[in-house]
Amino acid sequence: MARGWESKAIESQQEDRGARRPAGPALSPEARERQQRAESVALALADTTAQLQAACRPAQRDALRQRVTALETLLADLKTPQAP
Image 1 (cartoon, rainbow, N blue to C red):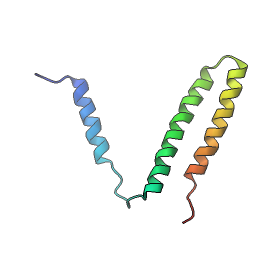
Image 2 (cartoon, rainbow, N blue to C red):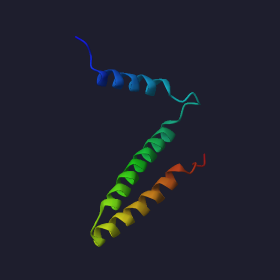
Image 3 (tube, one colour):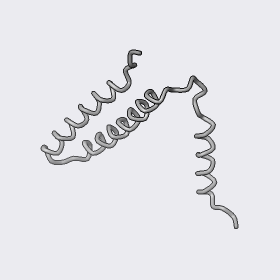
């Protein structure tokens, strides 16, 4: 049975993702966890920013602005290098 173009595209994307692994030094478990957390916070920030753009009520906009500020602060903290 022939596969559709969607499944071939997904397979190609998965192969590309596997081939683009960084060739740099391996990260420590703590550094890897910190990097994953930063990526998660960045996604939450993007989602909250989109919600803020769509929000109509002032109270909701204020709450979302506060969340954006908190997420930006957290992301900046996660991206600063830790002292050994």
